[in-house]
Amino acid sequence: MYRWRSLSSEERDELVAWRQCLQRPLHSPHHLESGKRHYMITASCFEHVAHIGHSVARMNTFAQMWLDVLCQPGSRVVAWVLLPNHYHAVISAEEILPLLASLGRLHGRASFQWNGEEQSRGRQVWCKAVETVMKSPEHYWASLNYIHHNPVKHRYVRKWEDWPWSSATDFLSDMGRNEARHLWETYPIDRYGQGWDDPEL
Image 1 (tube, rainbow, N blue to C red):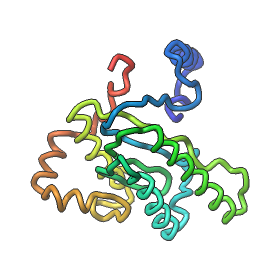
Image 2 (cartoon, rainbow, N blue to C red):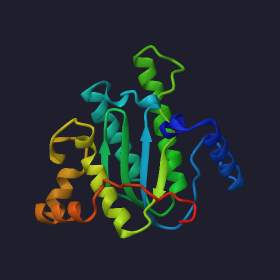
Image 3 (cartoon, rainbow, N blue to C red):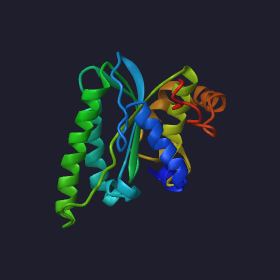
Image 4 (cartoon, rainbow, N blue to C red):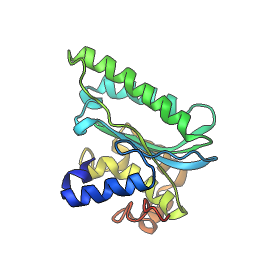
């Protein structure tokens, strides 16, 4: 959505034509069913407004509900981070479409509750969740680094483990700091995402 705003009208026309050629929906993510694989799941609040971060209590409550959805039968959470206006998770799942549908229902329930609490009925709270298949070990490990570094990137904290809504502390405990540092240096995030969503891949 945010890249779209920076495109010229000609570039937008080309992108729409490309999506039509591939028979992909024009205004929502393209979802592919597959066997058990690793996925990066991302969703953000509409216009990146910090609806999740309205309060610490809301962050805590939503984190638990979100993780419960991600941990449904047939899926396993590998890494996760929840920020005031978006979230990321790497999961292992047998089927991605039922999980995305469950996330959509969670977004609907949260929107209804939050809009009621803030007297904002009809307000759009979420953009749809998007999944990306992990295409290589490099993609996988860079994704874990990206997730755990996200609160630092957005300047909420200075260290991974200082952010309470993340799997970073468990990751550092399981991996050990030396191995985590090695993975950080081996799979950097400065070029994260470049080329991974090319249609040829």
